[in-house]
Amino acid sequence: MPYDTRSDLPDSVTSALPKHAQDIFLAAYNNAYDEYADPADRDGDDSREEVAFKVAWSAVKQSYHKSDSGNWVKNAD
Image (tube, rainbow, N blue to C red):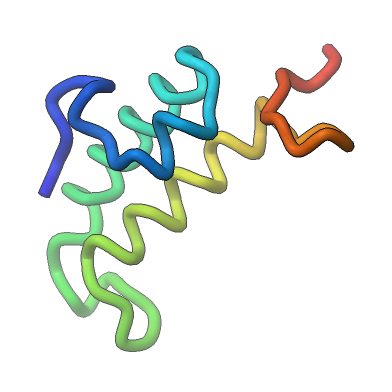
């Protein structure tokens, strides 16, 4: 199910990511959730939610990375 706000995101996302990264996750998840509604559009047996999570994390990783200390930080430009 799509998320309306950052506060609706799972704890695993809100506790790990900075707010801007949460915004990226939220937008990417919701977009992927809509885009992959049809099972024929998904590879393998992944559910709609699983695909949306994979897409959202991939989107976050384009702008953020985990530091040596384990915190998510913005990539250098």
